[in-house]
Image 1 (tube, rainbow, N blue to C red):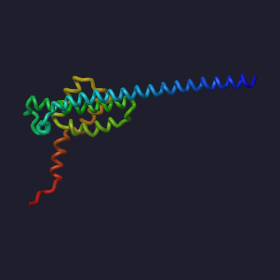
Image 2: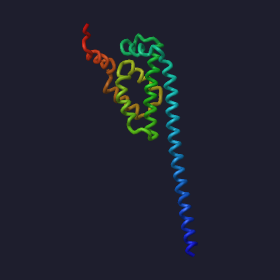
Image 3: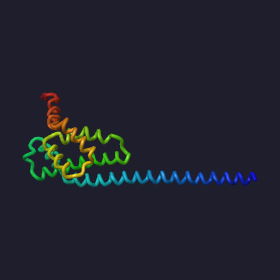
Image 4: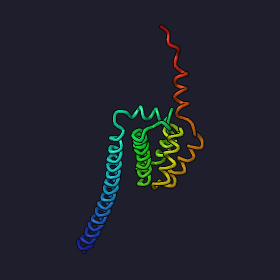
Amino acid sequence: MNSDRLGNWLQVGANLGIIVGLVLVGVQLKQNTDLLRVQLLYEESQRFIEHEQTMIGENGAEAWAKSLTAPREMTLAERRVMESYLYAMTEQWRASYMLRELGVLDEEWKDRIVEETKYYLGNPFGRAWWKAYRDTTRVPPEMLLLVEEMLVKNPDFTLPYHDALMDGLPEETH
């Protein structure tokens, strides 16, 4: 009789062990699925960014400088270089936002947009590009509002920032 009760308790314990094991396997499968989603998102984003960066080529800095100092004089090729540059940047923002949506990041994606919007879009060409971009693509609403808020706060940041850098340099002495 005692051996029957002991056998029953052992059977119950074994069944509970199996159930707990199955639950743990389920949790691991969910974690692996989430990790795979994050990896695929990152790879998709990187492919897109790499494609756009090939368009920038060797003259990216010249096109960027011209977009700040003489945007109306830019050639179509220079405008396309800048479009690639800015498109890749916003794709990085979108990827960070999506990582937050997947639970990988907290609110760090916002910090990136707050810091980078004023620098990359805080100039006439950048603002014009953003207006065309936001109206022709699907930007997550929360990301759209944050970029818009930063542009209101910093409508003309980039060139004055670089001018301030130059003003802060010591005079050359020979």
